Structure formats: structure tokens, C-alpha cells
Amino acid sequence: MKETLELILLRVSQSADIDKGELDVASRLIINSVCEGLRITRAGIWLYDEMQTLVQCTLLIDKGNDLDHESLVLTRKDFPHYFEALDSERTIAAHDALTDVATFEFAEVYLTPLGISSMLDVPIRHRGKMIGIICCEHQGKAREWHADEVVFAASLADLYGRAVSANERADYEQRLIEANQTLEQKVIDRTAELEAAQEKLVESEKMAALGNLVAGIAHEVNTPLGIALTSVSNCKEELKDIYRDFENDELTEQGFKDFEAICSEGLNLAETSLMRAANLVQDFKRTSADQTSLEIEEIALDEYIPRVCNPLKPMLRKEQVELSIDVTPNLVITTCPGIIAQLLTNLISNAQRHAFGPSVNNDVNRVSVSCSKNVKGIVISVQDNGKGIPEALHKKVFEPFYTTARDKGGTGLGLNILYNLVRQKFNGEIDLTSTPGEGTKVTVCIPVED
Image 1 (cartoon, helix red, strand yellow):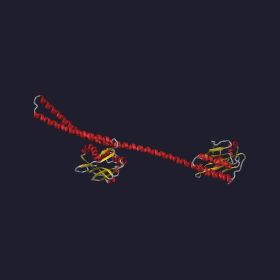
Image 2 (cartoon, one colour):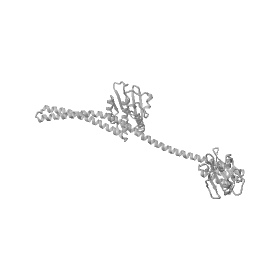
Image 3 (spheres, helix red, strand yellow):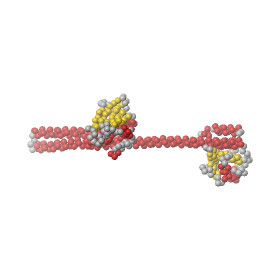
Image 4 (cartoon, one colour):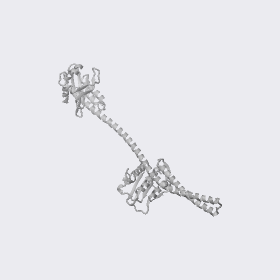
């Protein structure tokens, strides 16, 4: 091969334009190099369709006519001899294109009008398959294509195949980038959906817990209100009687003293009952307000925990379950009271709903709440002396939608939501220990800074 051709091939093969994935740039470099090396003014790249029924020009440079693109299509039906030659997948070196068996069909419609006398078509291969040709067209007097020129053109066709691979790789990379971006957005959207769904589930559980509170509070408040109402009614009757005696001049000193004693006792009983009802309502209001708020504040646990638990006692008493509370004095923590309120409400309600039943034979059914501090932080535990949980189910109870009381309206979300709240909001730990026949204990550890 002539040194000039070798230098052109070396320059093109070392060009970054071949491998950077921009096929148009690489195509122009290759065709301009074909024209330079073969000393021709017209050359183009023609690619097969999928069924190889036609070839279409994707780039045509005609320096004589100042063209750099021309949309041309050649079909197998119109030029059968030419396509038969292409099917051999070998170079077509038509020294006299007007008479060559492979190219004579172009004489009237293509070669003569453009003054093309010789053609050199070299196959373009990609991944071992012929995908098209580089067509080199000599205008003027017919010429003979030398062997080194054929090798030169074929080498440039191979470089075009390399450029096609680079273009595919760039397309794959771009699609991968777009897919990753789409996937990231999908992950972000899905995460937002899951967080919204979790918030709805948390709210649902809050409302369920508050529903239990309302039922217990309504029953418990009715009792002291009924006592107060009876006492006040009795006092009104006594007042009528004493006023009648006064009007009839029948009021005696002893009668007045008896009236004062009866009314004092009745009013004291009414006051005590109303205070009891007011305290229950106040505790309920605070607990329900806390459970619908995630504000951070400083709370004294020895005051706050009993305030949260007291409204639950009527619900437990209805099921013949006693509640005991043991909180280390002077434990102060800056946290979200609403989460602690929900934590205690759900755990106590869960124990009341699941721990006891006909299979439990206790003298007293008991739920115990305790709170203390250790080296890890604040430890809150809720323990019952109920039926217990088999070891195989210890991990399942924290899974979403797992419940053994679905027929009683259980959702299976209570402990799962608590688990997520403890881990995400408190960055704490939640642990369950249980033995069948000996009860269950759920322990929550909340890290605190000294």
C-alpha cells in the first residue's frame, strides 16, 4: 500500500471521532478520507434495510457539485444484478462501470448523467454482518482500481463498522443514564407514596386507639356524672322540704342541722364525682391532643405516663384487667410526647385485646407499665401475665398486617407502626420477650443525651 494511503488510514484510525459515538462526524471523516486517498470527488455510505431489499444513502459527498447529502434509494427489484453482486459480500471493483456485470444497470439512470465511469463498492460489516457499502465513484475517464486502493477503501469501511459500534455503545450509555434517572425518580416517587401511605396508616392506628379511649372514657365518665346528678337532685328535694317547713313555721333547729348535713354530704359527693369526671376528660384531651401532634417538648415521665394511662383504665376494667404503673421519679426527657402516648396506648390496648381469654386462668389479669433509666437511655416496658406468644412468632408480630384477631377488627399494623416510630423517630430499640403461659413483655429503649 502506498505510504500516502497508510498515513491517511493511520490518521483516521487514531481519530477520537471514530470512537466517541457521533456517527455523523465519523461518517464525514471517513468519506472525506476516501475521496482524499482515492483522488475522487464523489463517495457515499449506503446501508441496507432490515430485509436487505434496498440500500439507502445516508451520506453522499460530491465535491464537484458541492453536495454533502443526497437522499437516494436503490431497490433489489430495480437493480437485480447489482444486488446479486452485493449478496456475495465481496468488493465490487467496476473499472468500467458502464459495462461491468454488477453496475451496468445504472448506466442510463445514474452513471451517464453524473459522468461516473468507474465504481468501487466495499462492504461495511458490523458484528460480522454486512450492513451496507462505501461506494467510491470516479468521474471522468475510466480508471483501474489498484489492489492497495481496494484494501484502503475496505479498511475505511471497517473503521465505519467500528464507528457504528461506538455509536451503539453511546446510545446504550445514554439510554442507561436516562433509565437510571427515570429509576431514581421512580424510587423518589415510590418512596414518597410509601411515606404518605405510612402516615395514613399511622393516623389510622391513632384513630383506632383513640376510639378505644373514647369508648372507655364515655363509660367511665357516665358513672361519676350519674352519681353527681343523683346527689344534686337529692339536695334539691331536701331544699324544697326545708323551705316548706320554713314557710309553715315548722322549721326546727334539728331539722336545719339535718338538712345541712345531708346537703353537705351530697354536695361533697357531687363535687368529688365531677372532679373525677373532669380529670378523666382532661387526661383524655391531653392524650388525644398529643397523639395528633409531633411537637418536641420537655416532659416529666412520672407525671406524663400516668396521665396517658389513666384514661385506659376503664377499657381494661371492662375486660377485668388491672393496670399498674411504676415510673422512676424525676425522669425528665425532651422528646415527642405524642409518640410516647401512642406507644403506651397501642401496647396496652394490644395486651388487653390479645393477652387474655378463656385459656388464661389467672387470679388477677394484670398489665404493668414501668419506666426507668439505664446506660442506654430511657426504658419503657409494658408487660402482661397473659397467654404469651410462641417463639416462632416473635419476629412476625412486628411485620405489617400480621394479626391473630382479624375477625375482631385487628389490622395487624399496631406493632409494625410502633416498631417504625421507635426506630425512625427515636432512633431507639424495641424488643419483645414472651413465653407461652407466662405472658409477654415489650421493651422500648429511647436514647437520651446526658
